[in-house]
Amino acid sequence: MKTMRSQHGATLLVALIMLVLLTLFAIGALNTSTTNLKVIGNMQARTEALNAAQQAVETVISSAQFTDTPAEAVLNPCGTANTLCIDAAGNIMPSANPADPSVLYTVRLNPQPVCVYVAAIKSSDLDFSTPAAIALNKDCTAGQSQQHAVVGAVTGNSLCANSVWDITAESVAAVSGAKVTVTQGIGIRISTDAMSTSCSS
Image 1 (cartoon, rainbow, N blue to C red):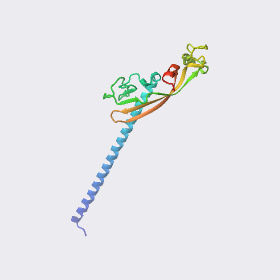
Image 2: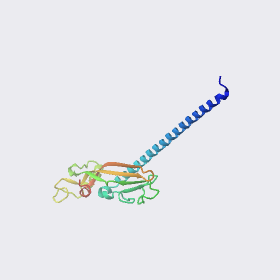
Image 3: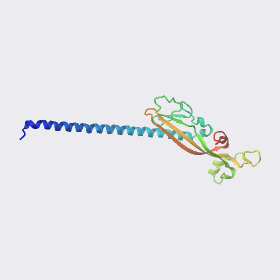
Image 4: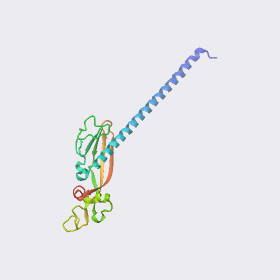
């Protein structure tokens, strides 16, 4: 028969083993939660960089400047041409310095907007059946007649062309270094003058 004195050591050993197991469980839970926080932080930084790049693309296509001068598509660049700076609230900071601490995302159009397709619109294809169509097409026929030496008289082309552009924005987060690239295609009507200068593909 075992005495009380001989059982004290076994209890201490079992208690130490339980304490080690509980410590290992706590360390494992802490490591898992730290890893999850890093993953969520990276996902958030990537999403914010994606939003900044998309915002830059939307800003560029809301102005026709990218069809006239693709190398200077951004109206008020920050730092170099075709660059936008965005703060924490998602505001574009015109003419800011990219090294400014309030700039969280720097977005560059890299490469510059590229015209991938262009075709002159035939005068016979223009629609003038509704007031909206008249407003859309009025600049396509201004000053034209069917006489020789007038633009489009021989070819039948109007003063407008349909074009398709690729716009690529590369967003980099200042703090986390997250980097996202967004490419968006856009179809836009341009003048035949722009067709011959910036969209001659």
